[in-house]
Length: 229
Length: 261
Image (tube, rainbow over all chains, first blue to last red; front, side, top):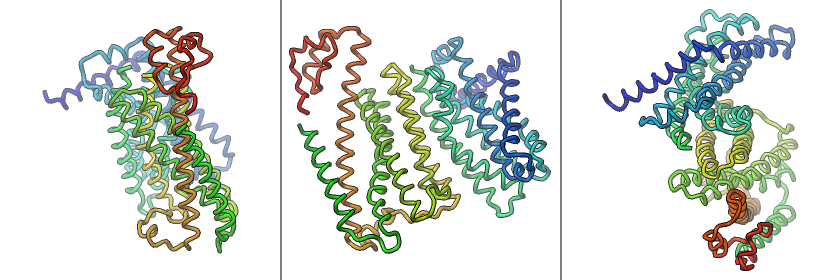
């Protein structure tokens, strides 16, 4: 088996383990999804009953809800590892550290995609948005945005998981770094919902893809140092 | 002693640059006296970016060599850099109010990038603060500093796409440095302030580095409870002042070489 195939199978095994644990235990799914829905509801109260204003702000609000709930999700994926000392066990295996990072990032991506898939219709209903026709662009934006979030989130969750005040430090360190992702994802979503009148969608999707690649490389390259601790 | 010389040179240079920038150079035709803020603002911004470059580089060197002295350099640069970043933002806002009519201009890529820069590195310092083990702290800080440095160009690039109205960068075009369109006194004021504050930056970096070494010894001392014989020798022969509060410091015979630094 080539190194790449071997690493891929390790990564998938780790992701599968995370998915199984979550499916059987349901520690995080319900609470995280409900939290995101409540956030969307509160945005509605904060911006007032004027539906036009909400429709205009909807892409930004959608991504903010994804970011807030996503912080909980990626943090949770590392907390389950350290609570039982499982991460130390994982670090002791004679396997490539990048495969461990990739595995955790895949679980993170899966969690984010579930989040996005649930929140998109909720946003459409609450803020009065017509999703018809925008599907392909929205799916592409969601896929690229969630990949970037999972790439960065896995890295920062790994940094903060064994720290004091990790609940504060994860968002504090991570939010400034994902600023370009948020900006591009919101712009792409806005363009997608408006039918891309200025054909700027490809540019924002490219920016997202570039961000994803850079952050995946940075995360894979540095995650190994965290496991040495 | 040598460090103090750097400090005094820096102080005199800053005084000279301030006097020149305030009283010798005439006010700008369009921006009036507000333009004088630019001398300090541009210099602060340059030093902020220089600092974070040094932090990322020192972090990489730490990961490579595993020498805690590189970590001390990274810490010094990050702290000094946060100060200059705050300076740059403050100066920029003071300048923007009379010239643009607003403190904050969301469409300006450099202002928003610099604000995120501040957030990134305040997070970096907090991360250091919340990790006790020196090696673990150095590793975490090094990789976080590295990822932050990678993020900055992407942040800048993405905000540029929002379309900005900032003046074109003063030093972006090399021909503009060789053949400046601004009259000579303006150029001298800017370059003078830049050089003066760079000397101050170097002085602050050296002092912070020395302080980091002392903190390091106090930490070590606290962890071990008492200084071992080997460390006594190391402390006595190093160029760092002893820790007066430490009970075992009496064993250093008062040989404090670094006192006159």
